[in-house]
Amino acid sequence: MVTTTRQAITRPLAIPTNGHAAQDLSAALLLNGTFRRGVRPTGDPVRLLLVDDQHLVRQALKALLLKDPRFLLVGDAASADDCARMATQSAAQVVLLSGTMRDGESLKVLQTLAAQLGAAHVIVLGDEDNTEFILDAFRAGAYGFLPRTVSLSELHDAVEAVAAGGTYVLPSTAKILASGLRTPAPARTGGAARQLVEQLSAREQSVFLLVARGFSGPEIAAQLGITVKTVDTYRHRISEKIGIQHRSEYVKTSLEAGLLVR
Image (cartoon, rainbow, N blue to C red; front, side):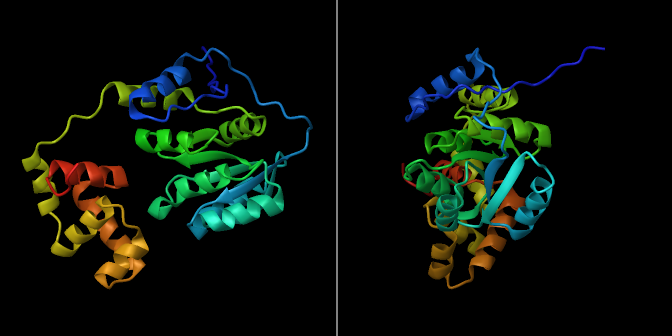
């Protein structure tokens, strides 16, 4: 029987800032020949800060991390503002950031930390097939990305590498990025996109278009006279009906349906 191990790419990368150069990122991730473990100056546990806007998820991750002596959990935060304050106060070395926070809060966390001198390095936990978000995360200052199905040993390897200043992704993520950039999904015809949107109720269509135009949950709630929780409910229904979740998908479908002007 042949046993294989997964090694991650950990060399710091120059992240392209424009769409045309995005293939350079995937190429660097795939072709980078340097593989190493992150080596910190001491054997002390890495000081971690956990960021997720879902309380139950934070509690579950905290319970897991507190059992591992290689990690020292110094706090958990639910927003970009809380994260910035706690990262400074706790002297966190690495931030574990959920990539699924609402209203673009995940990227806001990255941008906020990037503006801090000597800020903790960020590992994003998210959906491996959301290539646009992964690229945005690295451009905003992320040091690593892991799928939410990652094992505890892979999480430890990522934390060690990022704490040492390296960039960490699994080869599977690099391949998905490269594949997605080389072969973009074919655009739907205007008629097909309109048929998707027409499956939604009138209120769902209103929420759909406001999300596509870049409004946040609270802003949509204020415009429609409903609660933020109700906005989330409509977004969940939209996802169930037409399979759209990320803001980029809202924008793409709205453009194809002729509801937005490029």
